[in-house]
Image (cartoon, rainbow, N blue to C red; front, side):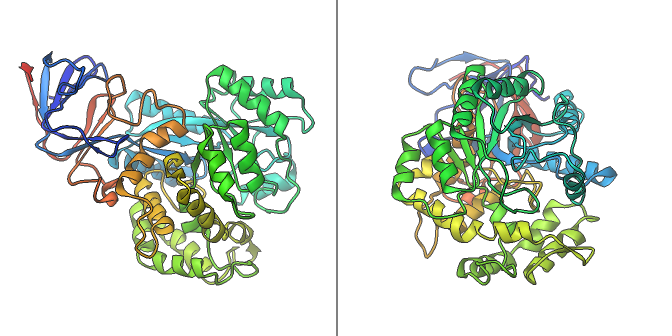
Length: 499
């Protein structure tokens, strides 16, 4: 028997993690789930001592943590055709398999595909996480809202992407004039919400064009950003911003953006920036997996043979092939490994002729400069303001690879035996802090009465061994339903009153 949303179920004899405080709840604490939510935690002060349930599940001392998050990924960037469909199904299944129950797609040019996947998951036709869809708004000509001319369309087609007119309701991009006033920007936010179903509003601070990475892209002004964030708050929709500059970091934090994706790459943050972040409502999603898959010693880069990239090369040598084999279908693995092989030699060409090394040259800064900026933030207490996203899609990562992103936190922050980032930090980052980063902490991210019953069952102690986080789970409850059960959990029915 598997419990459904109409039943009340007690989860007993579990080691339940209090992610907020980085510890376990007392051993006598149990959980009661009803209609997909945690309704009680008998054994805690202020909670009922006796709860009548229809069923009980004994977890035999295994560990219970909240569902995990990937705050930043892209499904549209996957291969097209039947093989792309199969790969997407695998990625969605892998998310659930590893306890990733919420993902945010932060850029999709044609919403039709993502909407179809979300509907299939909702109908139970395929397993998968909840997909929270961001809609990008910005001035026409910004990095992710380029002019729709023949050259741009051709450039995008090289990576298998088709741009559609921004005025269409199926476009994931809403544009306004570069000199737009506050009301025009507010109207763009409303269109993103009302026409496109935005669950997040996304901005961009990058002054370089996408694909070419040449300067000249339009950037949202401080006045426009303030109006957009204010309107998003009025509409009850969270915000995020693609951030690669120190100026953008400061502007976004001061304006109250919900999260900053990536890290400043142009120069170094200073101590005052960490203080600014800690005194704000903003979270940072470093997406360090971008560095793993894109920071190479590219010819012509100022970071050619940088010591940090050389250290990363050694780290990649330990597991790159295993990641590819784990992530990609067998038919796609050779091309994915070929990308790594080519970049390791200093560049990347399509058909051996068209040089597309510039994105990798640009993001070679992610580990040397971005890593330095992340260490600065952590040194000054900002580990509590970090979220977990890996930019799956443009990189070789899967949306399920939360564990790999956490391994990159370890690589960047915990150097030379210095444990800056603890196991409790890893778990908080992948759960409650990511929920706050996405503005959904009232429903997800921790194990508390009133929250959705997304619960991951693990063997072992994730508060001692962070690499357990993001591994294939023993069992998974999603919306209170037992959707994965590898460990033989049994639902005992009828239930009785339990203490």
